[in-house]
Image (cartoon, helix red, strand yellow):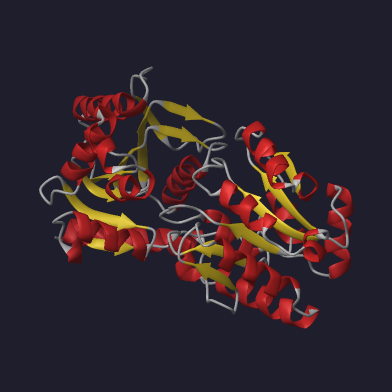
Length: 378
């Protein structure tokens, strides 16, 4: 197939959405497809067989930039006229043959994060208008979501045909993310990272601390009883601003229980040496960090507003709470897990790892190909 991929930023070293685009494009090329990426940026180690068409970059902010990319990528696509078999949109734009929802559904995000009066804000109105037009059946052939959560939200907010939405869960690189072979290795990694060997380690990895619920994570930590808190450490990785959260930790009296590590390339070591992934995200279609953690035998505590919670078997490989405001419940789950015996924790870790084995990128790409073929056959 000749596939046109529409993606605002293509960066093999970027965030989750950028890395996903790069991985999928490379995988499609390896499977014999001809891939052309239409994007503003094209950075990182790329596959030489992936073609690139530059979309003029907008230096506007907010919706203006989103809208600008939509207009300019469609213009660049029409101008190229290379006879593609299908268009695969990975950013907000239309028309497309297949649109994969990579960002939070804005209609739902507005309900979670903003007062209803914010709906008159030009930025939000613009994004909602664009989103509404994307989900008009005439503008988008098929839709791919990475969770059942997003699928349900689309059907709740827009009149898009149910039989044209397919859930394709993300994959994980099991060679890159793997568990420690022995407890001795785990302790060795902790020494290298400067983490206490006897500490109860909660891991919070995020690029956006606010959306992923760091303030709720810290408030939950402050609820732990003194004895448990003394041996608990919240390890925070990611490149977001630290100072507001350092001040929050000080106000809550947990500065000694919080450690900011900044952005890290060696996330496998952090996953493999922690005791529990603590990820109280406000809303996310599917958090890759949960699947990466599982692949490293790390159980997860997350919210039902995270599509990845669909992989969590509550009280077997992790814990699920309704949303990030459930601080007392999250504190109870943390205390419960902290008091588990070694064998009980091992059961959770083993269950998490076995769950991850059902998800890999080869399977993901094969499912995408079936969606593509369904479109072409129709």
